[in-house]
Length: 163
Image (cartoon, rainbow, N blue to C red; front, side):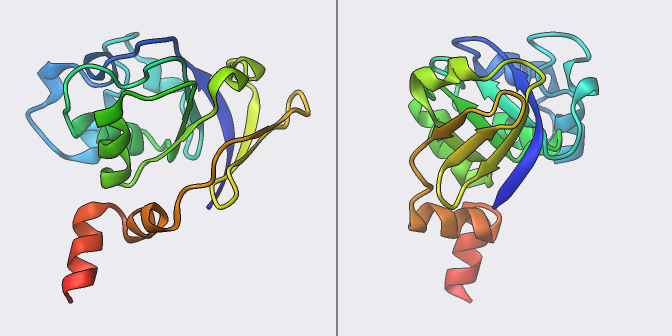
């Protein structure tokens, strides 16, 4: 999958309550959750996001509770890929299970600024910062994880395997 969009940089240790506050957990509707994505960080944050933009997190992105609503809200906001220095373990797994691509790029995260134009090729793990000309190499998504993503998440993957 190739994605080209604007980078929306957030900080270190962004927890799932910042991504989608508990008051919005009364639904699993991705549109409703997406409309409130990052509301715990900044009111109205999602209004600057366009389809296929890229979220850029720092260290330990997605820490906190294991709510599946967090990756659903990011997808619902139109963001198909999150780049980060590192991810909280359970968020990392939940993200892929929900169909959200997550790529760890370590200290190279500092080569991306808010509003940079970013192109991500998940097949080979290549991240191009079109604004600066920098190229960052992340690990490609493993084939079995790509199968889950291609199916639209773990539930759809399971349905496909059982059919």
